[in-house]
Image: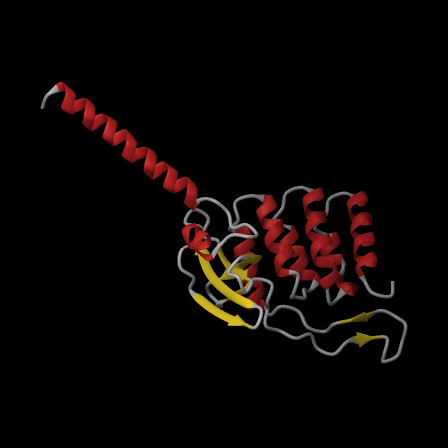
Length: 223
């Protein structure tokens, strides 16, 4: 092959590589308000599910991170002109085929001070052992503390915990400040604050235990 032909081949190869890198960069863009359906497809591909109502269309995607194993449910909403007006992501549990944070449980009727009382009212239902184990393993499998805290925050939108479950989640973290961050997220959803000793035993210093007591007290209704 002549020198000119080699040079032409090299130039062509670089051009192809540049096009591929440009396409890859485009795919890595995030969905933004005002994008068209074509632009969303270029980023996320074809949706797994679609539906519509009088206000527009909704597309659903389910994506898995091959490195971390984390799955997400992505919902993109369009207006009647086909432009993006809403975008939502949720962590997804492939084992239960449901959102993490949607424990599919309804709290039992409130108990505590009796109907019509102004005293604190607590709920008598927390995650069952199997559901909590799935959540625990999902959090434990996250790569960084911030990711773990994000998962706990999402899960706590719709679930209730026992003090024992809260303590077990706190033990996943090494330092007291991180353990207290976990408690702040879970405390408003604790159903048995009378068992707070389980939580205090996780913490090393009296100052941390005192802070934990404040967090639990401040998170209870009527207290």
